[in-house]
Length: 249
Image (cartoon, rainbow, N blue to C red; front, side, top):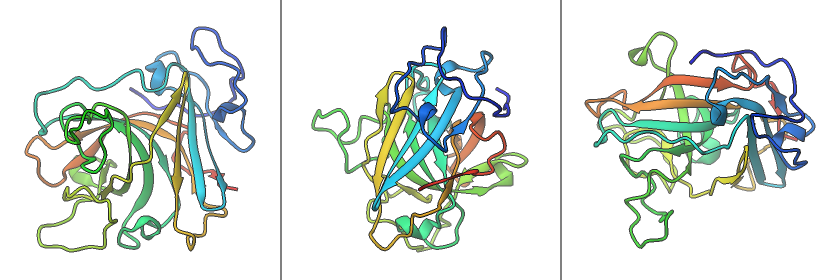
């Protein structure tokens, strides 16, 4: 899929299925607005991305041109080569804000689905008593993204943890050798809208933090080795250029 540039707001819609809901990102002051593109998969075609805060709590949300969360990856039968679909909010926050080593890359909130593995060992998303079988269900992560040429020219990956390295990591790090946190914040869906509300420590300064919105696919290295998790397809970018033009107020 190719990227497109955000140019206009879509306030109502027909075939895309977006409803006139005042709570959706599409209708929020300061939202990043993006033009609909019928060449894209509707559930990943971003119309708007927004984030707002109340004290140390931030709500990230995104309006799509279809039913958000409706499309999930096809299983491949193992971790190597597994696909990950994601709704992502890259931010200007230092990774230290959520417990990672400082200055290590782009801190992003992600809601992901991946049927071939489970990376939320502390959360039982489907409430069946087994915490290791629900990777397909949409769940949240903090990730640290870095440019990684091994994933392709100009591509990003979730930052790897080299063997023997002991960087600072969040308490809810799931044990994978990458800068990935599984904080347990639940993604909520309302037709075209996905929303994730997250909490921060009281000492994290959130005023004026910049953000963007992205939908993308990632893939686990077939050898399950560094680079472990590459961004392999960008479906859409709210700003068009990953410039993080919006600010949390």
